[in-house]
Length: 192
Image (cartoon, rainbow, N blue to C red; front, side, top):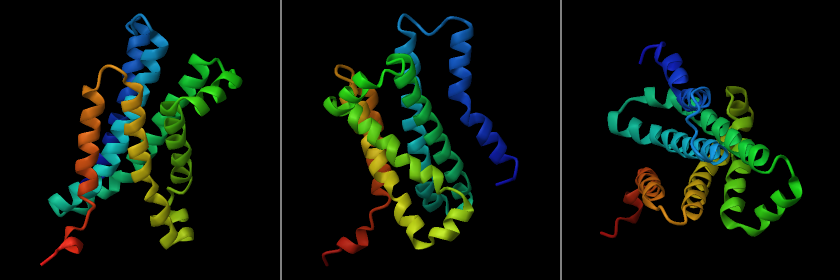
């Protein structure tokens, strides 16, 4: 893939920001703007986690290593949108009042697992540079396997949050299962 693809993917990855800016300018956030912003960035976080996970299957399907060049950028965008999602929740919903927030994190399982997923993303973002790959060596790969747990936590967060509408979370769950199945080595389970 040509060098101009990376900048194109970068600017396309800013699409969730463009959407919210447009909706803010034209007053299209709906009757509950805070919920709209929080949910918007939460869904985009999951989309970018799934996009990050899809790079390896795309490499296998197409026999091209070019897809792997986008994995780090997409992963960092996942962290970026997860952080906006979390900061929107803490800042817009709780107005940085940490006492009820901590209470909710400890008592509500969907908040606890979502917050846990964000915390697990932090070391991945910090260690995403080439320098950290060289420093951590084999441990880098082990550490970055946390993305599987994070993706499961993210989908569970969405499922538990959606008390009545399960269609969207179910789609995310199905996609995640397919992406994780690509990583299973079925030859190990050959019973013949």
